[in-house]
Image (cartoon, rainbow, N blue to C red; front, side, top):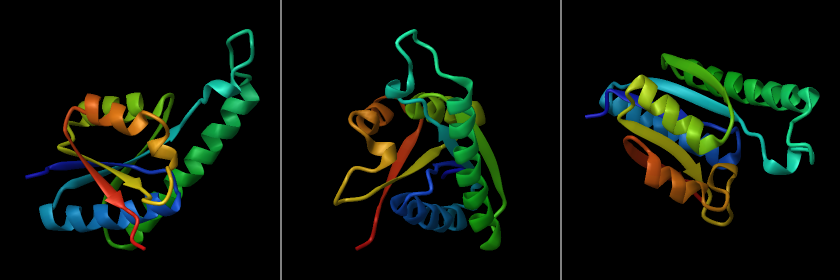
Length: 143
């Protein structure tokens, strides 16, 4: 079955639910678990000259690092071995890149039914499904 699982984590309510569901899958499959937080660079943050000020980039990286540390701590507190990864860039590209790099058999992402979550903006969800190098599990937030 799945030997390696990559959980794309953003710290949101739906991300936390996906984290719990990822634990269940990892327990069942005895899979190696990886957690990824992406410091995304929305195009609205770019200046007209086409560059991102260093202080904005550092702030976003710090936020993503904090989210990653929180997720890793949650998994470790539940007794799971987990490897944390921080990436900077477009979420779908970074998720697919790391999934390929580690040889993931499954990518886990969260999604809230009532609204669109950070990982599922616009066409990101569809793009992830179209480009993922492995299966994708979408964890729905329980009501």
